[in-house]
Image (cartoon, rainbow, N blue to C red; front, side, top):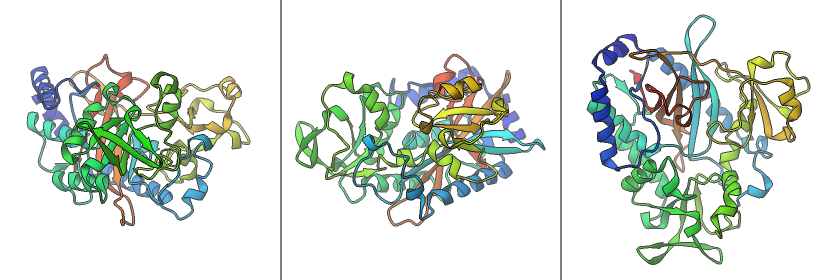
Amino acid sequence: MIPETRDRYNRQFSVEKYLAFMEGLDRVYPGAIQFRIAETPVFIPKDLGNRILSAGEDIIRVIRQPDFRDLTAEAVPPTLKVPGENDFCEFITLDFAICRDEQGTLVPRLIELQGFPTMFAFQALLADKYREYFQIPDNLYNYFSGLGKDSYLDLFRRILLGKYAPEEVILLEVQPLKQKTRVDFYCTESISGIHTVCITALIQEGHHLFYLLEGKKTRVRRIYNRVIFDDLEQQKKDLGAFVDLTQDLDVEWVPHPNWFYRISKFTIPLIHSPYVPRAYFLDKMEVVPQDLGNYVLKPLFSFAGQGVLIDVTRKDIDAVKDPSNWILQQKVEYAEVIKTTTTRAKCEVRMIYFQENGGSFPIPVNNLARLSRGKMIGVRYNADQDWVGGSICFFEK
């Protein structure tokens, strides 16, 4: 989107360079990348970058207002509520579609937000590899708030560990070796010293949790949570016995599981910003809009775009059996802003925010990008195309 940078990149691009880049990535953790990496980073011009950061401030202000937890009291399903919730979320991600407004200006539009981790550690590696194999101008950056790679990873490490030793902190996931994002687990282990543990491997004694570290039973003091609890519910019958994490356990969470629901599609109707499309709780909507073609229907509790209806009809609205678990959101039209060597691609930018214990406000720290040519954005929907997939944005200073 920075024309001269894009044109120069495309002129210098070759399939051979891309294959060498992918081989370089794969050598770090052989066979671990299970999703498509795009041929290019995204180059964000300064004015669009400022709008993205401004949009993030609008949203974060809502999340950090004193009554936010009261406003989202109904967000957490009662059967999935976990005791011991803290009063802030350490990790927040905001997904913005890159669009054009009526004047043709590039603008961000909020698609989704989550109080949940993403590819925090892998994105540092990915940025390094793009710079290693392609010519990325020095006046472009991917870290924010005065951070560089080392200070970003140090902040991430401090938030993960809290006051504990690495062996007392675990990355918790369901069948982690089967997850498409497992390369990020390996990166996280490398920079922090913590270990990845499957939920089925946890050992409970009273209110305490343990795991086996080199055959030794080791106390779990803090959990870096990658478990999506409603997904866990759907997998219960295939997993066998595992610890019920909704008990009152003597363990700290980062982030606490309840924040996955509080900071989610449930939050969107609460936000009033020029960068946030109108959204309505389906059960509280007095009148169904006549222009349903301009809306999408989204389940509150889903992950990676699953269950979203893009071409909504009145029949779809009437067919919803649990309207309290759905929102109707104004449709966002992605602009085909990425000029490739063959055609154009759409782009979504995920902004990453961290809040350390004692910090007054979450700060932007890094980002993730996803390129697409289809209706749905996300690496699972574009695996058979080129110039699509996971990437990172470099912002103009």
